[in-house]
Length: 167
Image (cartoon, rainbow, N blue to C red; front, side, top):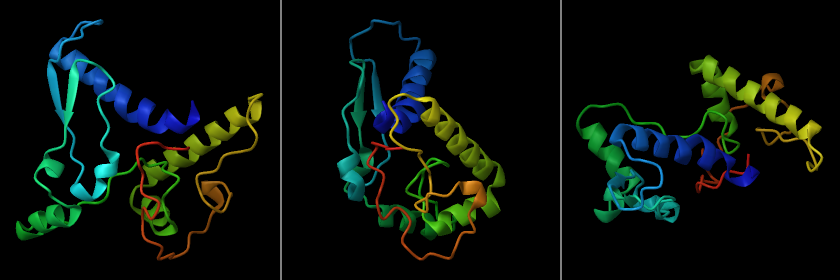
């Protein structure tokens, strides 16, 4: 199912698999055995979701303590650490031009992977009998590998990821 692909396939399922392996939890187990702390801040409370499996209980310690992203950044700055970047998938369709440009310049391998991912998704869409169009990761509807990115000052994540990616 496309709208859930990003979150389910690239975040939730791999984390559940890793927890199951690390904690030696057998298939079919139903009792709570794991408390999973999820580091989203109070300003992202809309992203809170219950666990998808009965043996994991989600907790949000930053939300419980009413800590905002700004509070987290201030904590890091006071200790001399660099400002942490917002987290996002390298192929997130909500990137603005500044982020695509930064990715292309500073993380060329991740940018190449995003362009390859876009190409594979497009090829799959063209072969699909149910697809109604060709998906692009950039708002220009031009392949990433062909775009000359501008210094678009639109804030990164204006359309903040809510964990329900529509890639």
